[in-house]
Length: 217
Image 1 (cartoon, rainbow, N blue to C red):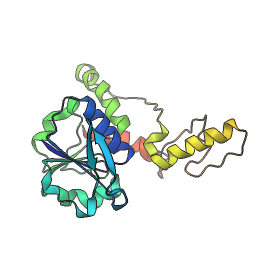
Image 2: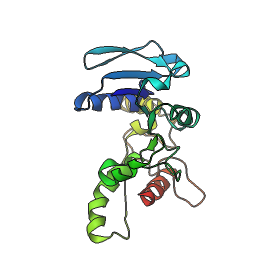
Image 3: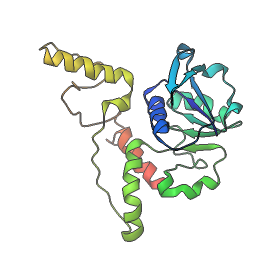
Image 4: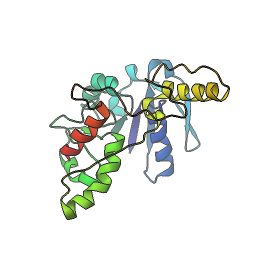
């Protein structure tokens, strides 16, 4: 299998590589792609060195499967183009609620992969964990209502917020003034009771993702 990862230098891309390295998935040819600013950087995978290629110049026909791990804006611009030459697995939220694009957790609804038109979307991280548990329970008891609380890591917001957690923790321990740039409140040694922005009905986008995505299964 030839596999390309778009956004290979980001947090999600690196985690995908970490999981692949521990798995038994056979990758004959791995292609790592990122933005122009990351072009030429080196990443080691299974003791081999890989050079990062630029997305703007990449030929999608080089891989049978392409994982997009670069966010919704990149997915919006590139996934449809890529899908004409490769099977795309998109990690962003951009295509999740599209009617003709399957939203897949293999342990829950792998059967929908029979018709994917070269674009496959995966759910929000919280949705994935929840439906894995709900599927066997729903099959047996027909669940009518679910009450959910999630406790999510700063890493889900990306590198810059992670850096803020680190710097705030350092400042807190040194008795310095805490300044929040990427969060509404101090994040160091704290929990903030919402994720993402609020919609008009009072739910946050994160909550709506879990509600709407689960209904699609």
